[in-house]
Image 1 (tube, rainbow, N blue to C red):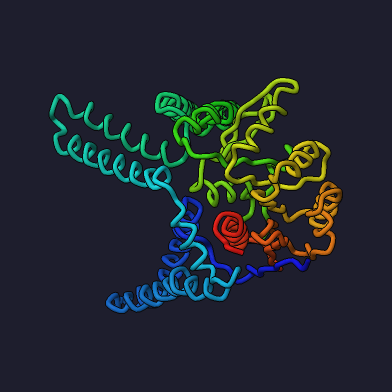
Image 2 (image 1 turned 180 degrees about the vertical axis):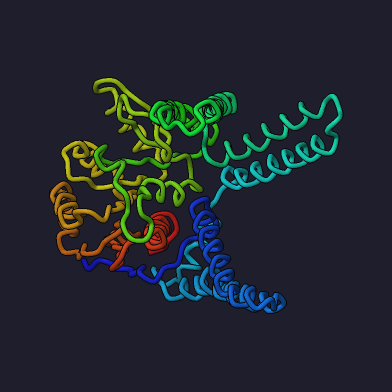
Length: 402
């Protein structure tokens, strides 16, 4: 049976997300710098009224690149007889109230926080102004906590409050050393050691604010999205124009609207951002992994190169679990990952059909409703192409009619 192939190399970035917002702010900063550079001759000639033309030209270029161009680009990417725009619209209709409430809570808490901060600032001389402003800070922090899947408000504020105190303390020590030593550079080495200690403590404290699997499932009662991967691949970045961005971060932003994104963690690790982890001792994790596979609405797998994932891959071939599985490939050692996946699935009917499927340049892989393998591929990798590859795969599993 011939497989399906969908090309996403022309895909633009997905809609609003924290990743997309960061990229948007970065590109807007570049546009402002470009407008300023173009305005240098205008400033030199003291004809300031023409500066609007320079900034306007930079603004028009930014508007085309970030707003208009992506809309045209989405229409050039098709899968299952639909454009990428139509696919993402269909996926948004599957967002449940639990995900929509994330945005509502963020907006409500930020609005409340800004209001309280404004009231506290206006009434500076009031006895209650400090308490009102503190309540505003807590409201804003709570909004971002709910949006970014942090733990309880107390744990989040305590961990990041301690981190802030440590860095302000380091800054205070540096000021004291600098004032006392004047032009003497001898204390600088001691200050570098202090910075190293502050960084070490930050790395240790920050994971305490991450939500656990139990907290995420209690907060979001929908069927979970299960994440399976080799532990050695967790820190592997995607290539292209996004530098050190981890693939787990991209997948998290793509699948989080459909349920709590969870995973079994590596014992002894510092709890990372991304999928909410739960930790097990000895072999107890296997029974939990099997149970979670059955409960999951969707299973996302990063095929690895080590035997550590083999047991989970064998369980995926049972009880029809492959039908709700999406394979997302890291860009490194692609051919080896494809061959290992084929070998692990070789004994199944689906694995036999996979031998005939071209996996070159594959970014994601899933079974369509008619049991054909669907490959989403691109000749280059970036945040935009990975987002499109995951979105199409989710659509193919949850929405496509065949």
